[in-house]
Image 1 (cartoon, rainbow, N blue to C red):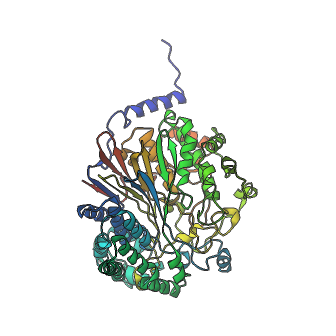
Image 2 (image 1 turned 30 degrees about the horizontal axis):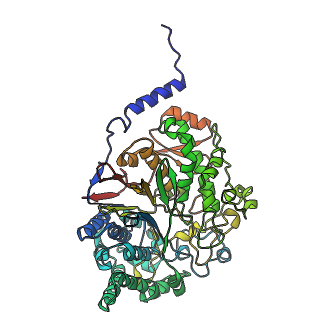
Image 3 (image 1 turned 90 degrees about the horizontal axis):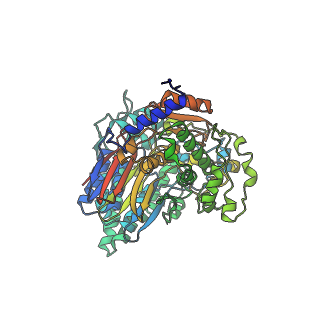
Length: 619
């Protein structure tokens, strides 16, 4: 019998066959963490103590909204890459209506925050840190509105874990070491120095891992919210109105006064009117259908629609037939993401401020088909431009003249450099997933006010750094130019998916511009490659750096591709030949947290990535 010639293609096919023989769909794949199983409830978030706070709410008779709010408060108190002055964005499935609700609690630019102001300060973009980086606080309002509208418990119940922790909890190494690493910057701000650096002047100024970390001012602020609720209840207010009385105390009362005083003392722009006029929006999220699964995301004030755009582009490409993490699969996802992210960087912004974002066109299947036809299957395209979605919603593009020169707009130089781009893919944001037997499901990606944060006066509240996500030059993104009262287009992006009108998957991840990249791959892992939720969370993925960074200098790195260390050499060689600049890591995403709803058994499957401190509890 003649010997057959073995080619690179046949080796690739053999490798795929070998991989398929060990694929999650054909035999049980071992994972570093087990799947979390639950029947009555499930609580997953970025810290073990945070998950415990959620479990405590279920044991008190609360629903998934109460549990999610308690986890939000606890992780903000623990500075799990967010603080109380940051922002909250959530998707909630209401089993009573069968609808998904969006929670928009993203802070807004304060009075005086204009392009002209920052240019007068010698800045090309707002700074990454400090008082001028701060938008109005959103997390307290988001937590209270969610609870008031959809929860069962009192604010006193939900804030009890946070208050207990603020009085002193054994700090974890991750936060303690982050404080120590940022001690020089924290020492510049007097209230931050007092809170974060209890050993100021010693070799280690930050608390050590396991040391009781005390935040007296924050405990008092949270106690004031509970006092406001109690006073309203004593006066005959309903549960909802009593919680909103606490909301008013934070945004219009003595807490607001101290927050504004502390901000202005340190050079911030906040006014009492900024806090009083800010509000939480209850929204209808946007969605698309991918092979019969309805996927929901928040709209253009965050990057969420990019996942929907990418799914629309990929739906007709038969990605499963390409083979998991094959050259063609990686190239297809990279190009689809680049197309969607170019649209994000140009068209996304605050939908409550003009100009109106063309979201109907962006999410059109016909528009996706047009974008898919632009993919060069032989090489990476480093010059991908935003498309024109307006014809797909019977409109005329008012900014068409800016697109051809979009890639020539000078990159901004931050006055105060932010974290580097690799760091930004993993830092910032936590994620919260909660569900209960009654059918409530909550997915949250809160963020902002991370270490190093400027604490506003004696409130104990660390201010957000989200202003850096704005641009000053219309040519860089005409929908996201800074303006007082306007929300910056953020990266934060919770996800919910329904099948046959019932919850199918709730999922989120931390990690800046990597979030919807990682979530896209996680979703395809479950839907196309038959992985269970834990396998999908741990699976090797990849990241593009071609989009414009949402932080710091908003730079783009066309063709740069972060691959998992396990990608074989022949795939690496193919990708290099296609124009990719490859980097490698054993860790290629932030920690993904998710809940899968098993329609066959009526139970919940929880997944939490095998790195980081994310943790889940179920019953």
